[in-house]
Length: 215
Image (cartoon, rainbow, N blue to C red):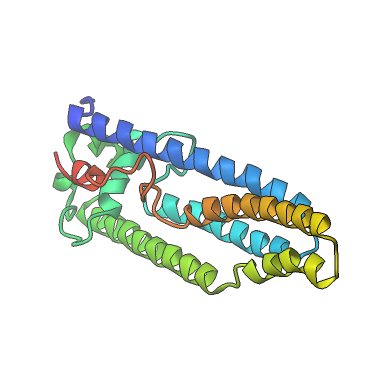
């Protein structure tokens, strides 16, 4: 069995790093979300966060279908990462026969013929396209969702409308500012996950696709 070439190993290592960074951001969002749900239980803010959490979970699965996250375990196997190439072959022309499968990974397709390869590649490409459509739909849904700013504005102004003293108003407004800041950190952390895992993060690598598709 031939060993995977260096370019493949390097690209997989980078993909694993991106997947790990995305997992870390998901964990941070989950921590912030749980904290905010305790604070805002039974309010419109909690309802928004529950909806955002649903779309973050969906985005995780979409990233797996798009080939940016491994489906099993924390890192990509050789086969799973090779299938990322198949998923990202937008033209559908790169993998048309068993001979198009590099020798080092061909044993994984033992018993497959050319039709099997084309069918498998087509299914992976369709799943990838569907995943990107789903990510876009999640972003559109959350963009259309009321973002709770009216909720915080009402809280901010309520003490003044209620005739509270200047000291009471100042303290209440400081409290609302603190609550709002925590809420925005959580909201922004969640919305940033509704993209491909390599999108606009400290670990963003716009050349990764070239590395994935080149030999």
